[in-house]
Length: 153
Image (tube, rainbow, N blue to C red):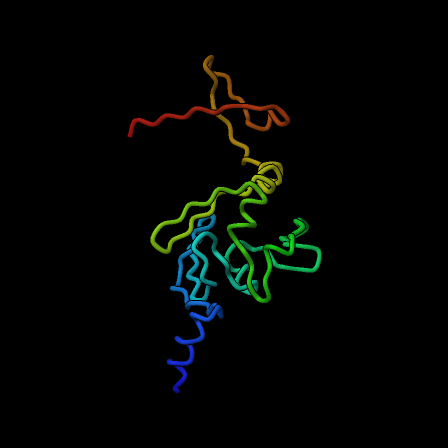
């Protein structure tokens, strides 16, 4: 009996063999990452933990999935050897996920959104108000403002 016949015979006897999975494309932020090895699963995207930093800048550590100074505890059900359940992790952190035809698109992570907006400062500029007085954006620091712009070209 050759190897192929043995595998065909034993797969029906209750020994489940992992089918090779096709490469996928992951869209995250403004990056497109090609992932050549995934674990076959009809409902979830399992990637190698080593690929995680290149996908979403997280790294699997003993304390959980970490990105900079943010660590999110990860239950054992999201890890299996070298594999990490990326869609399970997304559900855990309330991140939106859409997939179709081998492309997985991940939305913004709500946990990091507040940090992003607090750390960004708009550049100062000056413009005339409706009465023609020059106002600076820096005059409104610490307040919420809405800036409307328009151009004729």
